[in-house]
Length: 62
Image (tube, rainbow, N blue to C red; front, side, top):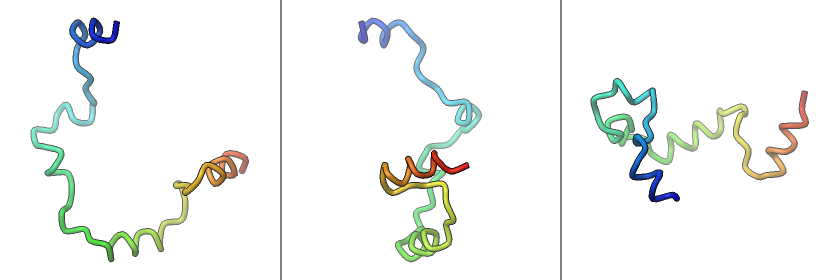
């Protein structure tokens, strides 16, 4: 059934890329290094969880 769907349906697309004429590589900044990532991690104030327990605890918060 999977093969039938693959061959008979339109390919998956993303609305945000429909108007983009470039490649994914052009969206990435190759100059970002470990120091940049370390600084971002230090300054980030939330939204991401490092474990399933963290994620569950965030869901319980009002």
